[in-house]
Image (tube, rainbow over all chains, first blue to last red):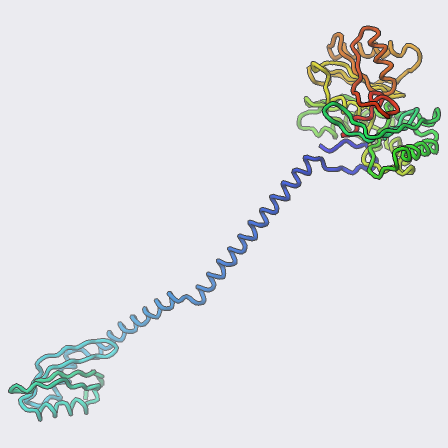
Length: 169
Length: 271
């Protein structure tokens, strides 16, 4: 309670208790302001971090790229499988083989393209060479890579190539 | 700085556990009828004489720069012991009670209170024009007013700082135009009465009778009496001579004081 005052123009002065309360209120206000500023700073940092991640998320980009590449690979594989089924590849190879050359083994790997690994046997080397020439000349095969030849009675050799496909002749 | 009918006085006062401590004190007499305490009429009958006394008073104290508490004399205000409802603002309640029946507009009443404890307050109302006369005189003499108090409330404020022994007793607050009596019982103020003062022969008897009636109102028998204000020491002697228990409301070292501290009822205005 303020000191009694019968003045015609009283000036209500604060009591000691009022001043103590005022000082406590000022201290509380200062503490609240400090906490608020710290919170705003933390918020700004958090927003900045969020924005940074949103704009430049390396992990997410990497994941997306990897995922896209994976999806692209799967799509390509599916497309290649649809366009170049094994019977068709084997039929195309058979059409290029001379009469004394026969297929001893074949492995087809579908990816972005179709990788073909063959093991062929030829009674004569000339027939084997003629087969290589026909492969090289064929637009359906590329990247022809003949392996080491074995000549123990008959010629046996692995050949690696890529099947390119295309419309049937 | 206090006004009364026969003098203006001022002191530098602080209060300790043992009572008031007076740094400096000066008193300047007033000519007869220069100041006439009254609740309705202008009190400063000869304002120039009062202003001159106030100038001299300032000079006697070395023209102090600090603000002064102006204390108006007994006899200028209407007072009442109040016990407002718990949900009422004490000042508003005092205004409501004290402005009923006053012979001037309620808006012209300056009202304030003295908390007494136990949910009770002493309220007082004084006419604005009366206060303005004193304020103008003080300002014209160079006094810087900090606030304004009334002698009966200031005195009771000081007496409350050292309640009567045992919590019961009668306090007599003397002014030159009026006096007040406060009855304490069980540590609480039970009654507060104000009367005009008659300083003719037999005053001690009349004051004793008023004290006894006030004690009866408060349910007290043979109470101890404390006295402050002009004439306090004389009354204490007279009452003691009659076998009553009477003492000064407060004491202070008297070296250099123009009067005893108990003669200055307004010392209670200071903190």
